Image 1 (cartoon, rainbow, N blue to C red):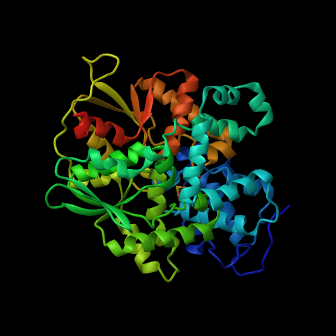
Image 2: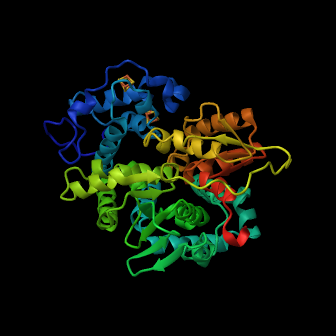
Image 3: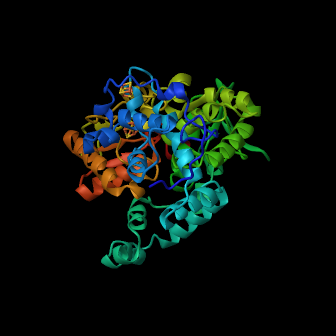
Length: 466
Ligand code: SF4
Ligand code: SF4
């Protein structure tokens, strides 16, 4: 029945550490406007698989009417955490907060953990927060990205010998760069004329030509740093081109998003504290990032640490977090240098489909700025994907833990891409990009999934390429 210890408290089943607030649980007015926005409800058509149903289950736990049975845990576990329900909800139910604190209690008090779950916890505790370990893992995976191993991973033998998540996960990893090419220091030779890089003991600092229009800090993101380092490099270059001073503190660490989604709240708080300390002394105008999932976690630092001695600095830090699209749109880029054209027919514009990552559109409410930047690029024909803010099914590690539900969402996203036939799709979140690239490739679509920064960088080539 229950796989967790049951304390007797006035919070019902929940104990006092990070319990959902009663006011939050009671804010749902049962209107049902969130149902059509919810991917699991659209797929399952089950009330407990909807936002309204899940809030009702959490409230039932808090009022001692029910216990965390396996079906209940499964309904909550099946949630993608996309927060589309928050966008749809007229009553302002803080669904993301409710889900994360509830998952935190389930995780902290669970009696049994499967081998897969233990492995996931090890990765989220030992690997992901350790930047050096992430780079070592990337070095190893890069060695394995050879024709013989790739052939094995596509074989029946791999499917028979390895767990499903390992085979699926491998198929999504992009070609990895050698370690020396992942470093932000490589940007030193590709900066705009008059700009310069300063390597300090505590930070890398990029100075623009002339007087800085804004003082920014850059959050590199562990996944972006090892898997998509070129995007980090181009993001910093574009900020410098826009006139920003960009400081990259060496003391920064993982944002804690994956840990928080998995219910590992104590670790997520430790990581948030480390980042608040690393960024707070700079008093920056903006703390910029280029990963929607990380940005949402960083923006949530104030909420996560609201009862912490660092609550004040955390709130200040969270208020300064900006997605790269917001920062570039606000500070302003110069006029584009190069017009983008279709690679299929240079006489035609480049047809660009736009996908709203959930943690950009729903969690950070950033929709206008990326589209505005793309519309300013000459030679771009911008088209929204149908239902552009529907979750693609990636959702952190959800595509590995819930492959069937994840694939159901991916199939709809790939249908949307096929419906508008773009040459590239902009998806500014690493999880979305990897997941959608796999789905499009398996469907045989001739489309590239790119980050916003990659298209912007093509319109502003670095001096060496200009
Ligand atoms: S976060 Fe997404 S999947 Fe979860 S209840 Fe809300 S809309 Fe549904
Ligand atoms: S839209 Fe909001 S208030 Fe209405 S049922 Fe859904 S969670 Fe409750």
